[in-house]
Image 1 (spheres, rainbow, N blue to C red):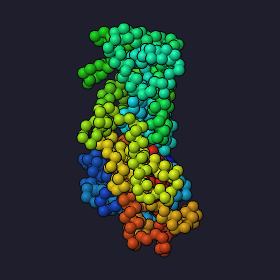
Image 2 (cartoon, helix red, strand yellow):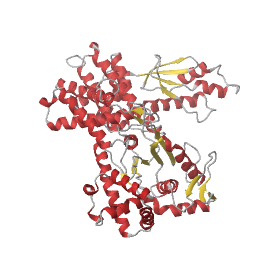
Image 3 (cartoon, rainbow, N blue to C red):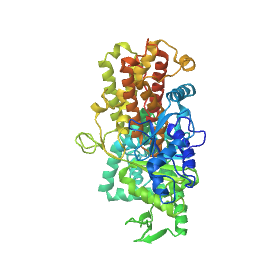
Image 4 (spheres, rainbow, N blue to C red):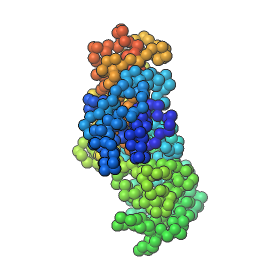
Length: 592
């Protein structure tokens, strides 16, 4: 992610990269466009490291250079660094690694500046103005399952990280609201409710059961099947009665989905398959004129290099399919919505399908061929949710678990734990409800997001609601404890921000300060690679580093000579934790 000249206020890595870029121009003036390789250090030699020397040496040796190996190149890079208040000292280790120790005063000033000006000054600045995040996308008349839960949670977090990075995000719910199953559903609706306009959620009851009953009828009764197939034609032909029945089924489903989104605090704009339907013929026509669409076994297909099976865009019966819809949607997003980055969040099983759609778009000239150029598309795949038996997560009778029930159970278990801890007597009912929701829903989200999304994960209430270890409960409680330290001090934290000073005198204070300053580059990495677990790792490590600082008797906060500076460090930690929670879609709690 490129960064503008003055727009890297909070990103230490970017600021150091600028200094090293200046040094490299002086060190090797005949090697233009050398990208500075700066990374946070894990060793004991420094905070950051510049790793250009070895790569440069392999480029310049034999070109009459004055250097005698990578260590000498490293020394020159170090010596040619412009002076900066950021850097306390530099050293060269091994084959030319330049280690940088940051200045404590500069670190303290940077943290203070963030406290006064706000955490938004630490937001990344990607070279993207508008992005589409296509996520959740359940099917009408079918129950949302845990796969949709993963897509919803991961997609929401990616959208939040991009929004924090000042990108305009179009959050798209590509619902399955079109296709042959609607003929069967509409005919069944007419049969059960002759005055179908009166059929509401209460009358129809469980939409999943309604779907199953209509499918059984469709499979068993040839006359009904015939009617259902006719209904599809009439719906697609735009006949009013069929359109109204279709809209009614969609609305009932939508109300079900809304219950899940409401609990998760997720906002989406629906543009389902039906929205793109009118664009399909002209998109296929344009691709045909370009010579991309060919006849194959009665169907019309696009051949993709390196893939054995072609992408079918018109079926042999003349009907359209997922590929037709996805190509039309991609065309619309690029040409009508003018998106720079289009992100699809679905299970890993759809990886090949999207890969073929993207390759077809590159063949058509819709997308550039290079990976680093825009506009671009990304498929964000994720693994399965498993039950404790290691199999796909379901309830006992092999039915898929209803998400609303799952989320309600997380909340009720969280509420029971609060009452067990005696909060029923201390808190109002409203406080208990809101805390149970924050903790319960937060626990479900965090248990998903903390894993690398490509792996399968096991859904386990006891683990995710544990208040020890890497869980949302532990982190939310850690945040509440920091808030209570600040409250107990009796000081006005807003006043301290402007009058007090952050000091990083003790090693544990400095370690905490350094980790806080790495927030911006971590969000940038999570955003660039579309990996929310990177942010979860950072958040968990932050709370561990804070605990080490706070539990050290030498770093006593309340009542010590250094109280003001340490309270400001507590506040900076709480501010960064809150922003992490916000990006993960988790509501913070302030007391426990």
